[in-house]
Length: 307
Ligand code: NAP
Image 1 (cartoon, helix red, strand yellow):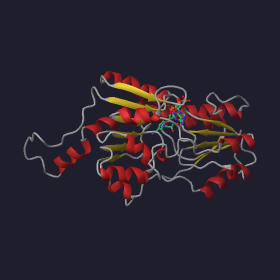
Image 2: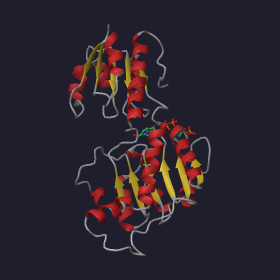
Image 3: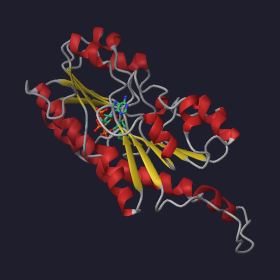
Image 4: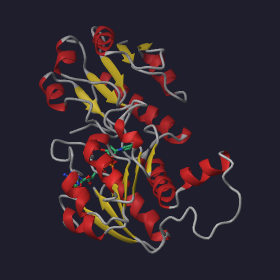
């Protein structure tokens, strides 16, 4: 029996399976453990089930000599220093695939909401401003027939592309291994949707120069990771009308403080990192995380190892 620290309570019954075999310590609070608490609870543990909100770095590994496995309850693992894990002999796993559909659905929800100005028009009803049908009010942009540019043609990018074909959209893709150049994608797209991982190469991939290449009628959607977009440049582009709008599931920082200057930008829709937040997806993510921990603690390869 190994001691495992789980940094948040999880939906579903996956943790019961872990607790049948191992001693499980689950962080009970709504907010994540701070770095000191995370180090304290992980010291002496052989397994760690972490979230995107946990910074897993060399210092944590130094203080947890018995740690054998980190199972991240997410497909992205930019919160983990994978190189430091390798140096410390700690296996790292993630949860690919089971959140692809949920995240692609949310991407389309954001795209449609921003294009057709759902937040603004719904707010006008609550504010008592729906006084008549107006031919020139609440005008947005057509999604059907428009060109969608997908940056990062992986599982989620492909799933978004499949949804786009149902809307008769033309789809452009840009990845390192295939598709058009990023500049061409930015210049031709009516909607630009980000689906690449956060890496040193993609940090601020969408900066002032990239935003300037987009059409003034274009909308940026980010359900990947916040720091892929330069928030200062995005705020300026929205204020100056360089682009028509942005819809973000992820921001930099997260959470975005209520007084963050970006939130004063026009035509901006922000939701609190809910890409995978369907009952089914979150329960499957918990199951995969537990599968990864159980395998690693039994001395077997993780079924979903980060390489
Ligand atoms: P994936 O299957 O690994 O796809 C990512 C794709 O990005 C890869 O196919 C890769 O293709 C491409 N890529 C990598 N570096 C690139 C670069 N520098 N420029 C352009 N493309 C690049 O991953 P996924 O499952 O689709 O997930 C994608 C990301 O979405 C995750 O890393 C995560 O951060 C984010 N995510 C967010 C949520 C949420 O809640 N909002 C939920 C799930 C996932 P090439 O090798 O051809 O470049």
